[in-house]
Length: 253
Image (cartoon, rainbow, N blue to C red):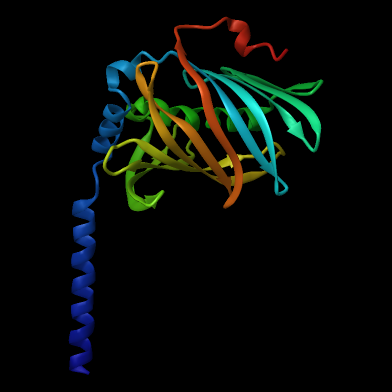
């Protein structure tokens, strides 16, 4: 019995020691964010990002079928957004437009347009910051975003350090960075679907970084929802603008 107790005590001490090592060695969230900002072009260059605009070739997977299309996205800050998507689903041509302007938003599919309700607007605003944070990282320097380190993972067979981020809307997500370069490589978050109450765990991986418009930008993204292929995008044009006409964020026509 004494031998068993000694063994258990030893195991407990080793486990406790290992836990202490992990805690002491935990990555500093501020250092991770600062490294990512530097990798993306530096705080001065990223701070000049007022409006981001890009065109993409987009493939959306639905019911096991890949549907090709194209999209145009315009984002100003974290509360103004416009995205247009055109493509074919089941042989039928399709166009959708979603806009957000502060506390209002609209969505149009085909000839049907409607205001975003409170839930849909909140989901779309979450989508905005999940899209823009990996582009500039600067919002994570705001005290309203709570950061804590999480375990490393492999992303595309390369080690990646991670952060759990709790946003001002009290929802959290995980963001991973290439351990060597510091560039953002993956975001994992719960996101809303088009139907009320529908949610998915979405995993978006970023790759093919290029120097464009004075910063580094991932030109390819691949997203899975609940582990299933959902969407891939390849950016064909990316530019930064000082401003756009107000109607960009108010008119769905």
